[in-house]
Image (cartoon, rainbow, N blue to C red; front, side):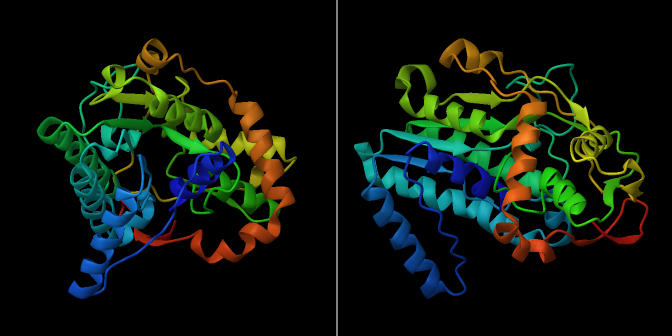
Amino acid sequence: MGAIRVVGGALRGRKIEVSGRAIRPTSDRTREAVLTLVDTLVEEADVVIHLAAETHVTRSIFDSLQFFQTDVLGTQTVANAVVKSGSNIKRFIHVSSSEVYGSASATMMDEDHPLNPMSPYAGAKCGADRLIYSYWATYKIPVVIIRPFNNFGPMQHLEKLVPRFVTSALLNETLTVHGTGEAARDFVYVEDTCRAIDLALQAPGELVNGEVFNVASGEHRSIVEIARDITAEMNYPQDKIEFIGDRPGQVVRHTGDWSKIQRVLGWNPTLTWTEGLSRTIDWYRDNTERWSRQLFLRKIPITTAAGKKEYH
């Protein structure tokens, strides 16, 4: 649940109260208790920022059920609670994902880019994204959909690319890259994402309700470039980069167009990739005790696109 941890932790730093509870119902009775709990929490709130999700693409290939339970049914639970609360909720921020787009079919991917999710995780996030939109269309709840591109920064779960590479270097391990490493992503620093959420939270409803906003840097970099940037920044040998089988459902490229959120809310990315990467590496170097207990979560057994079983 990396997006919750990295973004939720940074939101706490911005003095926005975040309640991060992961509850998975195991029976009908438990489910009823959870529904009651969510209804009660939402009734006591005036805004809802919905970040809760299972987020790791590779983990969704290994076991997709909990992704749909959490990302789709969990989102329905929160949205229903918002509907029940009536006018108590002034703003509902739903944090979606750029993964809903699939591979880029244009040079820059704006909010009208086709939704072609390419993994179970992306499919679940797309279902939640459109579910939330349907609740705005049907019930006119004051919802804003934020689609961040790849987040990175301190405190991120070790299953994610940047912390996996950084901690591998700190542990004198190889940095494993899927396929040729040419798949490219748009990385945005977590504090910039949090500013976008804050702006959407404070904006007048007539500007943002029912709207979708990309949060991106507008630049893409390949996975192998990221590995090389990290080894260079950490003075780690580049021959420790190892290429393994490609991941099924691999997205070729993401490059986000953030002109809409700039035009409507005045947001723009402020931290460069280089500066954000330096801050991130420093955090993992200085906080070994915070992440060392997660080491077993870094690798997941999957069957690659070539049919080979590997740990990714």
